[in-house]
Amino acid sequence: TDAPDIKVLKDVSFSFKPGETIALVGPTGAGKTTIVNLISRFYDATEGEVKIKGRISSMLEVGTGFHGELTGRENIYLNGAILGMNRSEVDKKMEDIIEFSECRKFIDTPVKRYSSGMYVKLAFSVAAHLDSEILVMDEVLAVGDMKFQEKCLGKMGDVADKEGRTVLYVSHNMNTIQQLCSRCVVLDKGRIIYDGNVEEAIRIYMGTVKESPLKLNLEDFPRAEEHKSHVAFMKKLEVLDADSSVFVQNSKMRFKLTLTANQQDLHMYIRAIIHYADGTPVTMITSKEAFEAKCGEDRKVTFSLDTQYIVPGKYTLSLILYEVNQFGTFRNCDGVKDAYCFEIKAGEDFAHKMEWSHRYWGHVALGEIKIETE
Image 1 (cartoon, rainbow, N blue to C red):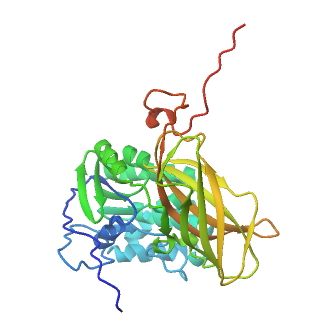
Image 2: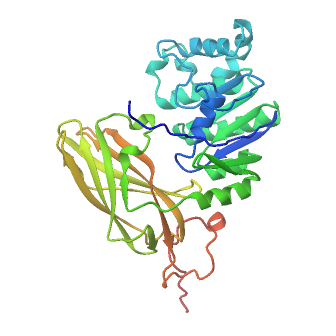
Image 3: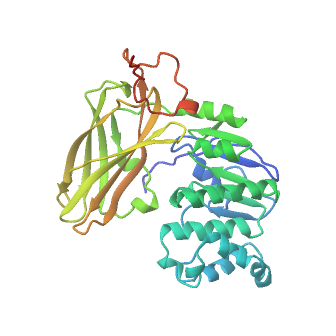
């Protein structure tokens, strides 16, 4: 093809020791996933080398290392064999894996019939319990339910602290990284810009979240597995009535979204999810009325978001297209994570005159306390 060669990583060099829990953070496209793919031997480096001492268990996407036609139990044996374990060694771990995964009822069912949540539960349990010296995780726990996520994070802490295994963790959730990791590597545009203390790394990472341009080509953004239905596709996002991506609190953000439908008779809705720059969810807004899109034609939809209660700071906006059929069943049509980065600044009428502490007060201001005298 005539596509240009793109150098994803540039002069990246770091090492980690047994028992370390290391986070990789950085904006979308920084090179995090490329690094974990290289370490997991899914990619070969075109330059440089990756030296590994020990066996690796990786969870880079839902179902990594699973064969859809095999049952959950058979896939456990398969993953053990890949790590060089024999059947008797896997048998010793089998009960713990099944119990932790919460998939006992379906353990002898082919995993192609599993939901994405069940996939993640079993895949994490396999990775965490089989005998590997290095555990690599790339943002996959977001699929599981909240209770299971907490269970997994506790297990990851035990893997490092009690079992002395190394954990390499990629996440946009800074709260999780603060709880779990002892070291953090910050990437930006394929380079390491910081390697060290977690708190300092988060501060530096926040500085890498730049405001987006006012016109975005959404076709360039990667899609998560649950948003690859190809039912519809978001192509462009344009910010209206603004000359920058910095907004004063209590103003409205207006957007024009261009999308195309690949099926007839789609009645779609828009869901907008706002995260603070450290990955903490702030709120979710959904359109009340559906809009129609004709198959094969571009459809332009204008919508607005109110910033009245969002406090000063840097944020990202994720967009999801979904439809609801006549029976009330939801289906994701397309989704782009962190599609738009913006900043909210305090207006003159902002009641809280001191600098806002996101860590202690959150990301929403409901107004002021009104005193009523008797």
